[in-house]
Amino acid sequence: MSFGALAFTPLVKKLQERYGSRRQYERMEKFGEPQESLTAFEEEFLVQRDTFYMATTGATGWPYVQHRGGPKGFLKVIDDRTLAFADFRGNKQYISTGNLLSDDRVALIFIDYPRQARLKILGRAKIFEGPEADSWLPSVRVPEYDAVIERVFVIHIEAYDWNCPQHIIPRYTAEEIRDGMQDVEKRMQALERENEALREELANARAS
Image 1 (tube, rainbow, N blue to C red):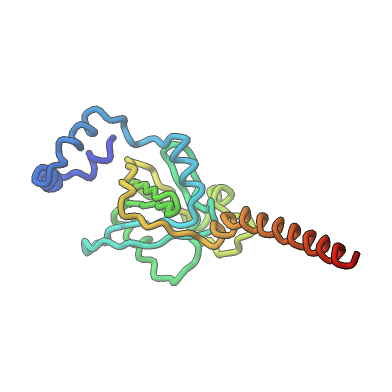
Image 2: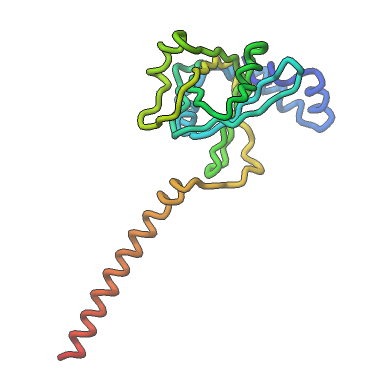
């Protein structure tokens, strides 16, 4: 199923017609590839993420967006239509968990700020707790991360879409900055060694 088939309601389509984008999206809906099974490209993108945002809807009709985070790779790609992650203990509000007990639909957004890439996923979530979660724990546990796992979220992908990179301001984590500075640091160290060697040569020349 295409992302548009789920997201483009009649009112959304009317707005697209009003602002001139309907023809483009209509072609994508008719002739584009189904956006329900991840390719190797999406899988590689997802396993590199250390954070994403998940939206659910409560019984009151209000949407709720929650940040989910952990070490890089805490989100697991189980297969080309299934994602899973451990729900680490947090502030104990349980809003997302409660919402999903009445409406299993979720919307996820993943952003790679340095590369200005954004992936949106629509899916349905199942929650596993207690003994039901035991079979999932080996798949979602993150080595050397000692946060308490309260439950496991398993998401069946209905559709996804790569979003326009426009207006994504590049940002970098401390790890990315350190990695980017390695070449600069190596060059500076080489220059320091060269300067030290030149100072020694100059000192020897003056002494003779």
